[in-house]
Amino acid sequence: MKRGLILINAYCKLASFVNQAERLKTEFNKLGVEIDVRRNDFFAVRINKEGRLESIVKEYDFCVYLDKDKYMSAMLEKCGMRLFNSHSAIQACDDKMTTQILLSDNNIAMPPTLSGLLCYDESQPINEDSLKPVVNFLGLPLVVKTCYGSLGKGVFKADDFSQLTEIVEKIKCAPHLFQKFISESAGTDIRVIVIGGKFVGAMLRKSQVDFRSNIELGGKGEAFEPPAEVVSSCEKIARLLRLDYCGIDILQGKEGYYVCEVNSNAFFGGIESVSGINIAKAYCQYIYQSIYEI
Image 1 (cartoon, rainbow, N blue to C red):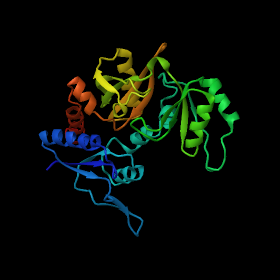
Image 2 (cartoon, helix red, strand yellow):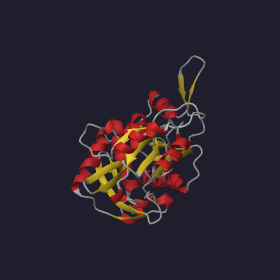
Image 3 (cartoon, one colour):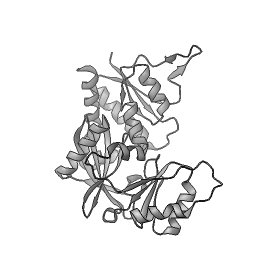
Image 4 (cartoon, rainbow, N blue to C red):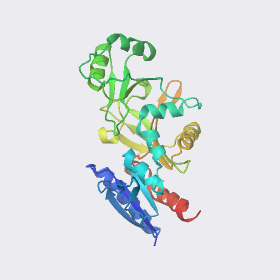
């Protein structure tokens, strides 16, 4: 019997998380693979008193890991479980600054970026002098992002120096970064889906209410055929980060296209609805071929 496990976050509330897993389960069932969808709350791997890892999910051939719990993904892999995406690939995308660093020096255009200063003490005030080089390098307005977060959360736009100081004061104890604001792409981006290193589909996202284009924040998607240079760049990014599946967000500026973010567990419901492309089927077929047809 062919069996697979889909793990979702222990605390997820959004219907999108559950729907993502159920769509994959449906497509896997069509391929003859039995799937269990479980929240990552049952401690699938434990460290016993002898210091050895013990897995209680040995009956599965693979795991589609729709979570960002780096400890469980590391332990599952160490126990021999094949994860989609891998532990290292998820980690490469989970930290936005790490993503920027890994993609740097590979002829991939990205918005100019500075890493935020590390602060351990909430009582320490922001040194405004440390923010002046940020403004000098990136200009205003600029974007401030916490390094961890999804669905547009933790992404802020500072229109002036006072606002920048206020934002950094609130997030100073969280890893963060600063990026140039690509004004031509305000409220708009291109979401590109890549599976197995190959382009599968894309949509244009637009928001009339926010500089962020996320559908969860009010953005709307529409079918879109990206230019060849965007497709080539996204396939290259997926290969560099060794991603089985990803959604890549592309901004368009006056000088060309820029990679904004890479999402290892990007939702595909929106792009399926506007494009008619069966993303879940494509992903399941890729996993099936990787596991059972090698």
